[in-house]
Image (cartoon, rainbow, N blue to C red):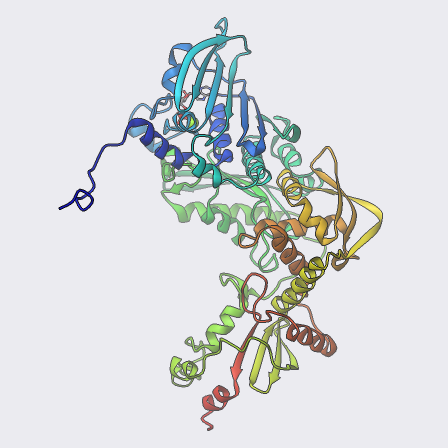
Length: 586
Ligand SMILES: Nc1ncnc2c1ncn2[C@@H]1O[C@H](COP(=O)(O)OP(=O)(O)O)[C@@H](O)[C@H]1O
Ligand SMILES: [Mg+2]
């Protein structure tokens, strides 16, 4: 047996290597460093937290707080793995009251970047300084400095080029950092936060004035004033569930969930179950596919929630998830019911899209022979055998000439062609048409822009402002002429021709929402797809005969008529053969 054939020898990894592997679980990107350092500052009782990033945080992150500080004799220990002042026993892990408890963050950050920590406990004459470079400690020192702690983190993943390559553009990373700071500015309105990104103030919350003032700092005054107060307590088996916060009136819905901030016992979390619980309260009040905005803060007995389910502590697990979810739904529903009724009947679109990613997929399931709900049409006729004989898809690349027969459910066009019956999703089809138009024009170097007679000011949230900066080129290529301001707002001087006539600020915000929610495309494709989506006819729009014909004609002319820009189907075909066979005709 040669040495290459023999089983690889098992070795215990050297500590530096083990530390780096572990670091990867906690520190994924600059925003994770910011999150850990901000959480430490809050655990240290800070009343003010200042964050500054350069190069999206990959070059430099500075987090400064006015909290308790670390005693000089303990500073080196703070950077050891599993070193924490927050837990003493295993039992305490089941009732964590602080944001940190794993004792991993500082060790992970010191393993992944060059770090300087300057910290002074009130009463000490000077600040203690700890430094790490290349994963190793440098000799400790002391310096002047105000009470509190400052971390400087440079060259994140500098010694780990493979990880550095995984980072996105500086602007994308800066946006993720903004989201973290925004989350905590809202979760802790009593703390003043300030975020500087590439030398500009991206966010500054007052640390006073409560949730509404914090919301105004992260988003805008107008929306902050429109939010509805939530306050509700439910007694459960494991203690009281208190739900507090602010939620948007239904008509302030958005295209994604980034403006729905969830907080559990003071910790900003991303928890789908909680988000669904909030959305359930809006059932019937929002158009399909739209999401509410708000800040929902849940307080439960720390023993009733497990925060140790995720290395980055982004998720939590409740002991009684259903009780918490229904308390949240009840709290939000109560708040919405108590608020003034909206001036107009909110548009309610087909509920078919709920829980189904695309209405067409439901239709396809039926056409493809999924068990029908009606007992009359038994599986013998519509069963897999009948449908399987002639697949509904794939279709020929190019479409045959389609003749419209009418509209179904205000969302689909019914059309006939020589090879069968077609059901066309009007929104998806129009998206495809618009997308190809925009891309074709861009390929020719043209921009279809509509200058505004009066420039409009679009106040964006900090996160949206960062996205707009990141995608400045792609937005310009669509026809936007935008000018930055000092605040999280842009001056809109021209809009894409497709959006002419709409409220320019709203149109821009809506487009950015759509872009933010799109996790499949990027760059100019994403921008074009978002414009296509926002300018296309929607489900619920009635189309006259002439409009139906025009849409089908445009779809026939497309290069890829069968899918929307995101790859969802635009149409379904029921072959003539299949229709005949299904009726027992030959
Ligand atoms: N900004 C800070 N102010 C005061 N103490 C801090 C600060 N950051 C870290 N520490 C101390 O360092 C310890 C280790 O921090 P960390 O590695 O993040 O672990 P954890 O937060 O899970 O305890 C903390 O328990 C705390 O005692
Ligand atoms: Mg920590």
